[in-house]
Amino acid sequence: MRLTFARNALAALALTSTLASAAIYTVDPAHSTVGFKVKHMMISNVSGKFTDVAGTFDVTDGKFAALNGVIQAHSVNTDDKDRDKHLRGADFFDTDKHPVITFAFTKQEGDNVYGNLTIKGVTKPVVLTSKVSGEIKDPWGNLRTAFVLEGKINRKDFGLTWNKLLEAGGVAVDENVQLLIEAQGIRQ
Image (tube, rainbow, N blue to C red):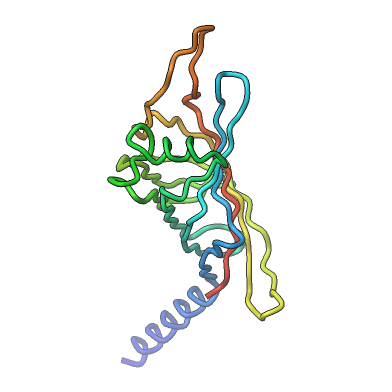
């Protein structure tokens, strides 16, 4: 009986130590950007971002143990009202029917973060490269860290298929979209 108690006590201590080393953060939307860039008319890039983002992440020793994000699709902003209205419509994000975009972490290997991205009701696995900053204390006593995720997706994989053929050849909007997520989190 004493041996069982000792084993249980050691197991509980090991679990407590593991939990204590995990650092759970809530994304600070005021200091975070979920951005994208796509080639337009085959000659230049159009950049945009989502302004309404939320999420949590768990970082231990500079590596993710968890990472989940939610983007309100209607918050897409490319600094052009007409284009943003088009992006919110059925040709692209169809935000009335699909109000959120989500990311759910599955694993990290080296600098690669794997997860499931859901856009317009379609979920696909994606791989993003990551860089996690160290933790600092802000002037108000909060512990913060930040990360950067970069990658590329094919928008057609997520049902974002609208396009126009150009008279000179090519298309109005490239299929490939570059993602750049820069997020800062506050430790809970």
